[in-house]
Image 1 (cartoon, rainbow, N blue to C red):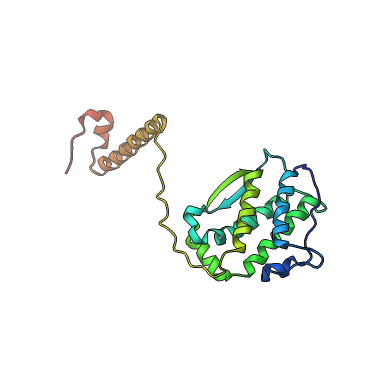
Image 2 (cartoon, rainbow, N blue to C red; image 1 turned 60 degrees about the vertical axis):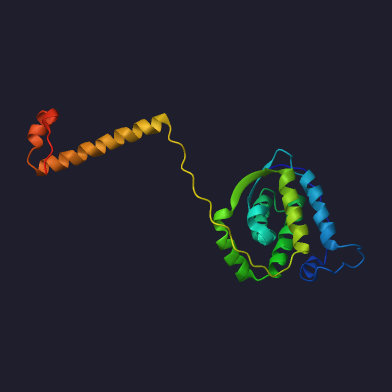
Length: 214
């Protein structure tokens, strides 16, 4: 378990109501609760070492287009769940992370889940996995949350063609192994063929005497 600084971040009591209306303010709190909660990501980020690498699955803006934020909702939620497991059940950091997990789940309830799932499947080949620094990771989460607040709930996107897999270069060692394997396969084939022709005995005694048979 990772040992990190912890500072409890107060959650907003009406966060779930906010997720559905986008305009509700908590009693006794001024300003936008969504903005206030998102701002606390900076505090949470400071509680985690800067050199810590956090796994994330994502779609880039140039690929996701107008559906970029929708396509990143569930991957961010899943990543935060994994991050929360790095802390104990009574950890303030885990409690703070859970606030944003709940927020993201609420945001997904405001859109068509079936449409989101089918769109994610259509873009499946474009998702990328990475390990980001703490700063980049939480900047990404903040951007997703803030962008979603001004994004239409209905969406339709056509994915670009899947990238063509690139074959890795063949090294000298691999090339040599391939040549040896090919030679062995040819030898096995010739053994089988000449055995059927009844010429195996003569061939094995003197391979140089092998002649083509029709």
